Image: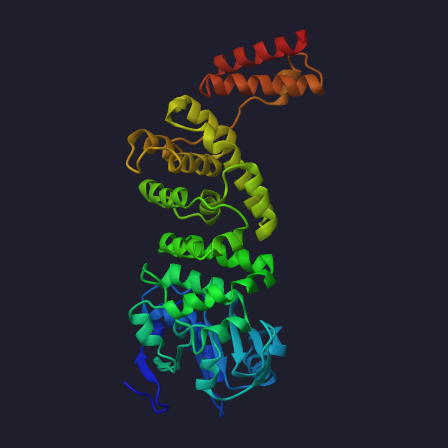
Length: 422
């Protein structure tokens, strides 16, 4: 079906979208009085392939000052998050929408392109990265496609708009976005050949990117449905080494995806990064610096590096329960799944399955003894009190977390006596 502008078009039911009521109110304000507004990008793409919509972006012919004036008059909040580039965040009933005025590139130099505002939807679509991200939908649900995105989406092909080399030179992050979108939305096979060749040719540009932007793309890529074949292609092209700065363990990554599925665990980007890039602590430190990971992500990678070799079904259920108590469930699962992925066992191994799923059946109790239990036994506040508490806790864990008063009294008596005699 062809639209009046000559673009291929389809219809979608926008009433089924999340925040549909708020979106309708926003379009009521922007799509009138000589101006047009459409939903663009990821929301349209995801709606067409029945994938959850997480955010909704709107493009408009109205210039930013007019957008601000209109939404404020309607009682909405306007936040000038990128107004110099035409972007205003509009908040309606606490839900944000990113509204951007149509643009045309005047001059491009990396991600800081010099732009002018425009009114041509086809020209605006042509300046985007991939065809599947250049779709737009009007308020009546009509989808407009100026770049062949619908055909590409039908076969799950991630394809650059126009010359891939030019698109990449505009922003080298598009190299990682190409692979990330292929991992998430692609068919699982080899990526678009022309796009792949351009990514390889432009790989030196990855060195220009901020670590935060690289981290963001890699974390999303790692949990894509087709992350495994995508990473194989990247490794063959030397791009994983360029991005992560060290050896990658693709076999461990492949096995981790299998054992995650075996226990029904949600794909974790940090755990998958550990499987792909961490064997020893030095690997974790390199990735922390290379990707500017958060402190929590860094700590998880360090924990995995230190613990994956030490865990196996041979520790028994008592040892595993003690480990859950010490590590907490998330870290225990990291250790167990990574240890399993790097073992010789298959993803159907019963003993590893029993070990890795223990947190689903066992919740570590809270240590019931307090400082007061030892102070009343004559232990003064200070190092001796801390030593008594630690000794009692170790004994309690070793005995399998007893909860009856008699057992706890014996543990406290023994720990107090040991502390007093030390």
